[in-house]
Length: 285
Ligand code: SIN
Image (tube, rainbow, N blue to C red; front, top):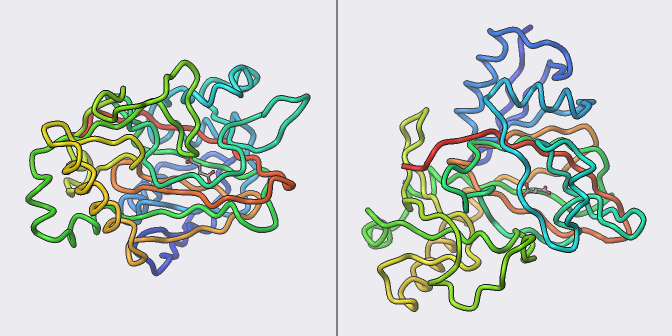
């Protein structure tokens, strides 16, 4: 089966046409998908109708799956209805309980689950219900952000690590069991190099996780805050970004090692239901 690759024309992202992800995928076709993913960091497949089993099977072609992350305390238990590998992202409330995580608020720029020692290398997100407006997901290319980083900022982060806070979700809610962070120097989480080397491409990428509660050990608090603000202002410039407007049946896979993402808010009167898997990665180096 010959696939067609249509680059977004932006700093990252490409659409792949000519494939049904619910059907068996031959090795040659899969190799072409994997190569396109390496080149473009985020791949879009439109018009896919996937059961959770299909989504898991396709995701597992890339590697073993991680179980879904902990969500906010107010939806603890909802995940139990789902498969352990599937994270439901939704604002829908049934019988007084959210069926998924993240609600309808804006999700800030982040890397998925970078607060663990071995964060997933990729996430795969499939859309089942989509609001008429809002809820777009944007991605930024962290290879390009590093390549263009002003020399003084690059010097300031060479050899440094950053603490990736584990307490809070990308919509600013506390995860189940987490306490509020009152001093970012003491935030729970994992420490990762601020410049990481991609284990497959060998390329170097800026690796920041998320801004909220981040801290650069070894720096005075104010210096860490100033440096993080400057880095985030740089890496989220429009020239590094591609924004995806969802349709029902879209599937995106993104590289968590070299891309960050965020989501726009949308009306709470509408339904948005997405199923996500996350593919195991290694310790950032
Ligand atoms: C996420 O994985 O961070 C959620 C993205 C989205 O809801 O579009």
